[in-house]
Each structure stands twice: as structure tokens, then as C-alpha cells.
Image 1 (tube, rainbow, N blue to C red):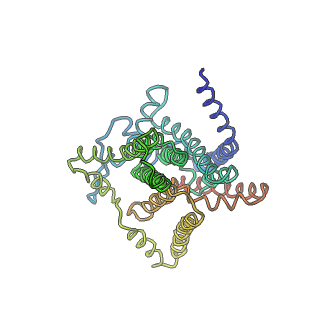
Image 2: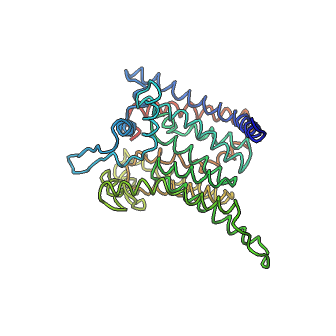
Image 3: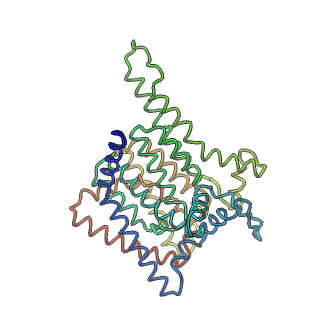
Length: 394
């Protein structure tokens, strides 16, 4: 082993040791959630594993993994649900897992989700530790774990995989690893449509760093030649949007719809971007009856909380890359005319929204923070079991 390889291995070991409390805490919260889900499901005569691996999007991903694209369902109202709406990276990994081991596609999807959720937790810690400190990083990971819809992190869905890729891409951006950031943004773009938010974060940070370098240069100093830094930055910028753009263009070519063909596929699912009009109308309809007015008020409070967290992040000086990323993820989640029950899980990747809460939690005494987090974790586990045994998540 060379000296360089030895130093890199030592650095990785040190980074893992530094993140160990966050990862252990995350694993404990997720284990609690799975335990409560198993007990709740058994009491209702259901299989917790089936709920995690063979429900809603999980079935679509497994079908793509097994037979490729081309399946669609035509509903009585004329809507067409086509599997082209689902981006390919998770099905590819499911197919790979089934090919190299004795796993079904559903099993492979579950395994990918478990591993990716740990990678996401580590990436979130790395970002927050870099921006603030270790204690805030641990708190951010725990808050992400105890979100009410945190059970989705353990499902054969793409949220955990996407969050892992996005978090590590943002970490690469913050530490100047431009090629790594671009490559991870490319993969994120092959995972979910919102992968373009990661590409936008890479481009924002790269442009701002270029402007800072130009301002720092003396007026009479000749501009530096194209060194490895600028070259890597440009390469990262070029790589970042290729995943999402490539898949969208491929779908357009396959369907004959041209560059906007993917939007036609999403329209078949009644998904689109309407600036939040459909969601606002949905919330407004809750106040038409007294029995649902409380739910409407709760939705308004939830949206206000999300907006407040973002504004607080701006005031606290979060790095622009984080603000661009979380802003786009939040806007697409809240302003899309998609299934309204999906919006909480669509916000899962927007972990920078949790940073103001993480900083507040980090200021508490360790015993008080542990007690508070433990209580929320138990409530989240119960809600996740109730939710998954009921209507959610679409």
C-alpha cells in the first residue's frame, strides 16, 4: 500500500469514527421504527416486510428491474400510468442485487434502501459537521431519522438513495471536490426528477467560487492559466445535469414526445407544476366541513413551518448550495399538483431545512436532548406503523 493510499485509508477511518455516534443513533431510531411496525402489522395480520417492499412505488420499481420499461396501466378515467415516470437508478441496483445474490428484486430494493439510508445519514452528518460542528451534525441526523414519515427511509423507495447521493454531492461541493460533486449529481439525476436540484446546487457553488476568485485577483495581475482547479470545476458542472437531462431526453425520444415527452408521462399520473394552486385548493376544501377543518389548519401550520425553517436557514447564513438545493426540493414538493399524501415524503431529501432545529437541539444539555429525541423517535415509530398499515405512503 502506498503512502497516499495509507493516508486516505486513515482519513476514512477517522471520518467514520467521528460519524459513529450519529450513525449508531440513526440505526437505533430506524430499528425502533421497524420493531414497532413489525408488532403493529402482526397484530393486524399483515406482513411488515410486504408493506416495506411491495407497496405503491416499490412495485413499479421492481417491475422495471425485472422487465425493463414499457408497462403502463390505463385507468377508466383515461389517465395512463406509465413506468417511464420512474427514474432508472434504483431498478438498476435492484437488478444488480438480484443478479449477484439470492435476492428477489423486492429484497434487493430493501437492501439498497437500508444501506443508502445509512449512507444518507453519514452524508448529512458530514455536511452539517463541516458547516457547523460535530454536535450539530449528530442532531441533524437524529432529526432526519425521527421525521414522522421516517419509515419511508426503510422502504424499497428511492428517497434514501437520492438523499445519500445528494448529501454527499453537497459535501463534495462544500469541500471543493468538483468532479465528485458532478458525478454524484449525475447519479442523483438518474434517481429522481428532483435530481436537477443537486445539479443547480453544484452550478451555484461553482459560479460563486469563480466570482470570488476573480474578485480576489489583483486588477493588474494576469489571469491564471487553466489549472487543475478550474478544469475540475468545469468538468463537475458539465457532469452534474447529465443524469436527469439524459433520462428525460431518452423518455422523450422513446415516446415520440420530444424534449418535453417526460412531462406528458407525468401528466398521465396527474403530476405537474402549477405553483401550488392544486395544493392550496386541496387545503381550502378541508374547511368546507367542520370535521376536516382541523386537518386543513394542520396543513397550513405544516407549510408555514417549512417556510419558516427555510427563511431561518437563510438568516443563519447557510451556504448557498444548501439553500438552492433545499429551496428547489421544497418548491417542487409543495407546488406540484401530485398526490397530496406524497408531499411529506417528497420533502424527506430536503434535510437542510432541519439545520435550524439541529442547532437549537445541539444547544441543549445532552440528557435533555436525548430525552426529547427519544420521545419523538417513539412517537414517529408509532405514527409510521399506523400510517403504513393504513393509507400511506402513496
